[in-house]
Image (cartoon, rainbow, N blue to C red; front, side, top):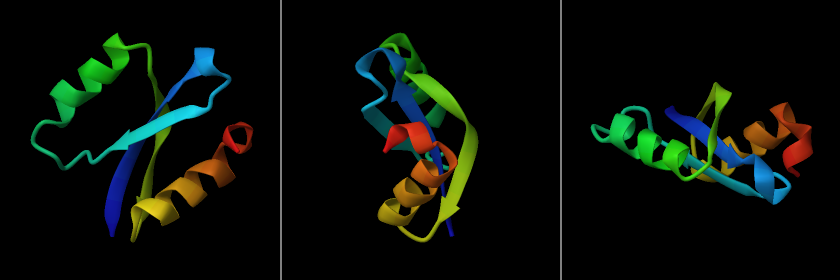
Length: 66
């Protein structure tokens, strides 16, 4: 099962959502780039089989991101 770290941009009515794979060797660098661009890291990491499943789980946890 894959792991996903989600990030959102709060000043866009929380419509801009993206994610990274924490197992990616460039994760720390990519995370810093997102944070520098105004994204906020979700406090939860999602475990799912697919990217689509991860997004569904993320939206279940964060109902304001529908």
